[in-house]
Image (cartoon, rainbow over all chains, first blue to last red; front, side, top):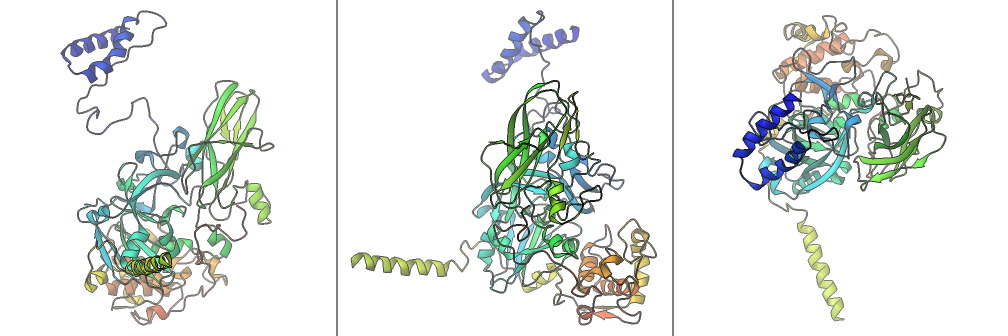
Length: 426
Length: 189
């Protein structure tokens, strides 16, 4: 109580020296609070965050010190990020704390093809060259790119390693290698048309400027459809961990294709198998195909692993759905272990290859149960359970079963009668 | 009749626009010189057409493998380092896939090995190897996996012709991808 009083006194002293309507307006609720502070039911009177240089109230805003949600190295018990040399590898986003569909840039998941340092690129010196099977090879500066017609789109990116396992305790550990941001830039098709793509073009290789010059081969049809050369992310420049100053967005394709630090596009007539492509070689045609475009996938983020329901009663179940096949068409939620499925509500209009936030209104009766979500996308692909996938491939569904290709299976969360939530695979 | 003439005129104008659209529309960007393209183009395709001149033998590569620090991460025997194995622990297995995820063994083209070393190695000193050194290291890794004999040097012409043990026993990502297609034909999920 004493400390609160002294903070108030401090405020009144500094308040006396303050001028300007905005500052006084902001102070008014606290003054009212102060008068009622002696009452048992009064709202607390909070200390002030001063607009000094340390608090970042002015130059670049900080979040509240009470908001402590952070990313973690992925997977738990795996390679640390940063490691002893300062290299970072895989970092998962705290989906359990997410609201809406945009992942803050500071919390966007990060993956590198091997432990990596981030290149510290001066955008004034950065160039994007497009060459190969084009009529006119061209080199663009960042200024050039910002003169061209832009688009702004919501897109998720998901890592191929985003695979729930029995050991995942919460949704960050089971699903945290996916994020969604608002990306701004020039369509790759705009740039390729400026260069004039030759008829013999079938593939293109995208390459980054980081230490390993990471490169991937992709079909030219994807380039002409919706690939985006992005310089903007969530209303500001793309963050270094996400490819500053330029990142290729390949909506709906596995994360590794979204080439960071993009410096070169080479248009070619065949699959080039450069660097990152080696990991996509497969013995089996079907497995190769399923390791390419992200399938329809959803997960409940509240209530989810390690959260706790305080008691029976009303809860809005909330979650995220996304698909590399297009926009989400339908999300269903089950609160009885998958016996009955109920249509969930969309929070906003689903967009192509972007997170869709869904909600389902639920009255928990306090009994032990399992909650799940599943989705369907606009081209009719449906999110399966692991048992359904095993059945499709004529394999027994047991602990040894591994989902072929990218894992888009349904995540069960178990709710105990004490309200604790655990991974249904555990 | 009049409206037909207008339509015909509009058609001609639109055709004119579409022909123009095949040229540059915005006139933004600079044309790089052939030398500039050559300097940055490190993408080596299966035909090897982008390979620079140079030459190297397995024996030279064996020495570089130690002096360039490869052994420190991949192991002196190429099977015992923290970094990925570069030699199979089961080299006689008739199923090449069962021999393990070994780049100089599983790659369908020897050019892939050259490209990988050239752009990504050695750790923290990427891009410092000369063309001769990359040919030598590629030759060494192919030799220790019994792909080429110890006395076979590799160069711009011979490297793309090396017959890799995987043959055509591999699947690629779907080449016929189109917007709005499923992950896999007929797959409901």
